Image 1 (cartoon, rainbow, N blue to C red):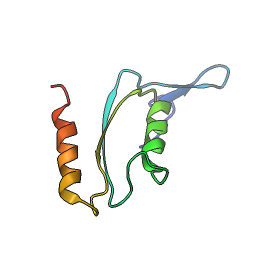
Image 2 (cartoon, rainbow, N blue to C red):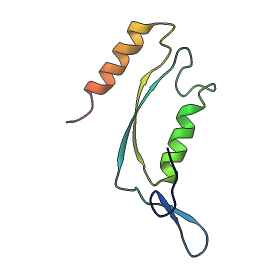
Image 3 (cartoon, rainbow, N blue to C red):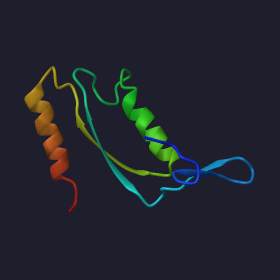
Length: 88
């Protein structure tokens, strides 16, 4: 991810920032060995969401294949189910 002035965000006259990618939709596929997404040990998901919101992106769909080291098959199956629910 790269924040670039006049491409992903801009400054208003008062110094506030506005994201320039409001009409975009994002699919994040996040995997982890042992960390459960949205747990207190998950620092990645909130950070990515924050940065994408900074760019103006609010339509964020997260596909999780977490805790793969604990139960690989279950993690992959859960991710596949989430992918299959994406409207085409």
